Image 1: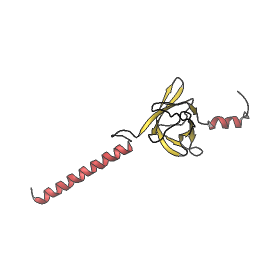
Image 2: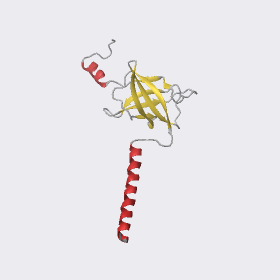
Image 3: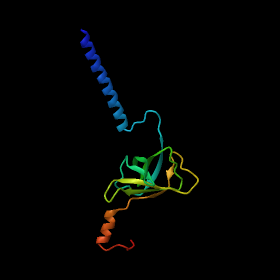
Image 4: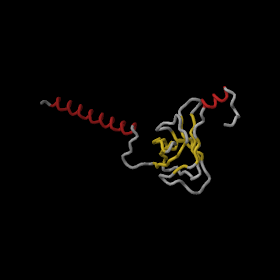
Length: 152
């Protein structure tokens, strides 16, 4: 084996190692995998309806993203939503979680309205006051058929 061949093989090997490190880095970041602890905490919210809400949807407060939806489960006919919130954001126990739409027909997200309590929700705690999304189809159907303002 001559000297030029060894240099070429070392260069190819180094290129492959750098490529594998880059692929691993991108995989961990795009997959949102946390290797060294977590910089957030989990709270739960119960909604009567979460129509259109998906995992990884944004959780915002005052228009600023503070977390994301981690999971949505069905429990006793209601939806239990797991929210992953940044550790530097503390939620008062009387916050309100509402499901909103970005734009007219955009993606759903959860908007948190700040509360006024001095007591904070502990990690693993529950948001008690929730509001389901506005059902545009139902509202439009009532308008078309003249049922606006009628009591059921």
